[in-house]
Image 1 (cartoon, rainbow, N blue to C red):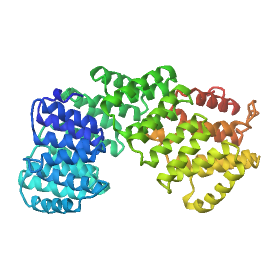
Image 2: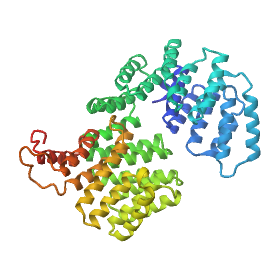
Image 3: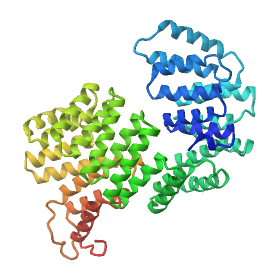
Length: 518
C-alpha cells in the first residue's frame, strides 16, 4: 500500500515495521520515499530507506546513505549499528572505521535518547540480536514509559526471540500496548502473530476482522486475513479475501501469490495461473526487484503444484534464475534452479546446475542427492549406485533422509528390478518425508515443503503393480494401495485440485472397494 494513505506518523511507522518484518525491503524504501514527500529530510525515514538499500545487498550505497545521516536526531545509535555491520560485510573491511564506530556506539549507548534507542531496538530485532533489542527497548521505557509503540515493540521482540518462555509473555505486553494506545495497529498485529504462533488461527482471524473494521487504512490486513483463511483450509474464502485485497491494491504481492496458489492447487487452471504468474513477475520487477529470497520461494512453491505444466515451469525457471543472478553466492538458490530443471526433464542441465550448487557449498546434501537422482534418470546406474552406497553409509540411522531413501527406491526399481525392495524404500521415503512436514496448516511454506509433485510420483510408483480390479468383498486393500492412499490423503488436502492426485486417490479407493469414496 502507499505510505501516503497512512493517517498519521504512528500509522506510517506501523507500515514501515510491517514491511521490514516481512523482509520486503524495496517496499520499505518505497514507503519511506513516499513519506519523505510530506516530511522532507526526516532522519528516521531516511534511515529506513538506507536500511532497505542495505538489506537488498547494496552495501556500499547503504554505507554512503548511513554516513549522510550519521549523528542526526533520533537515529544516532541505529545508524552506527548498521554502519558497523555493513562495514564488516564489505569485501574489503575498513578496520579503522569499524573501530571508530564501535567506540561511537559505546559512547552513544550512554546517552538518554529514547527515539534513538527505540529505532535501535527495532533494528536489533530485525538483525536477530534480541538481547541487545531487549536492552534498548528497556531503556526507552525507563526514560519515557509512554513512548509511542515502545510497548508493542517490546512485545514483538519477545515474540520473535526464539525463546518460548519469553514469547509467551508477549500477549500480555501487546494487550498493555493496546490499552495504552488504541490506535497502535502494531500492537494488534502482534497479538495476531502471537495467536498464530500458538496455533489459534480462528482467534487470529477474528482479531484481523476487528482491525479491518477499525483501521481500514491498513490494507495489508486483508492479505493477512486471506493467508489465515488458507491455513484453515477455507480455500474459497481465502480466494475471496485475496481478490478483495487486489481491488484495493493491484500490486499486492501476497494477494497475487495466494490467487496463483488457488488457481493451481485448488482449481487446476493452468492457463489462468500462467497468466497470473506473468503478471506477478511484472509486479515483482517493480515492487521487489532485488528480492532474491522472494524469487526463489515463489519458484519453489509454484513448481511443486504445477503438475509439470511446461509453460508454468518455464516461468518458474525464470524466477529461480533471477534469484541466482541476484545472489550468485547462494547454493540454495542454485539448487532450486536445478530442481525446476529436473521437473522439466532436463536431467543433463539439472545435473550441471546441482554441480554448481555443490561448488558454492560442499555441504549441500540436497544438491548431492539430486545429482545422484539425475544419474539414475540418465541411465548411469552403476555410478549412481556407487555414490548412493557411499552416502548411505555416512548418513544412515539418525541422519536418514527422505531424499536418500528415494534414491534407494529408484535404484531398486531401475537397477535391481526388485519390486519388494522398491516398495520398502518408497514407504521409508514417505515416512521420513511426512515427518518433516507440517500437515496441520496450509501455508506457502508448508505446501512447498510437502512438495505435492514429489508425493504424486511416489504414489504412482506404489500403485504401478496394484492391478485394475478391486479386492474381493470383505478383504482389506493390498499393501501397495493402502500405502498409496496414505501418500495421497495429505496431498489432497494441501493441493485439492491437482487432477492427477484426485484420479489416483479415486483409483485407490476403487481398488479398496470404497466405491462411494471413489
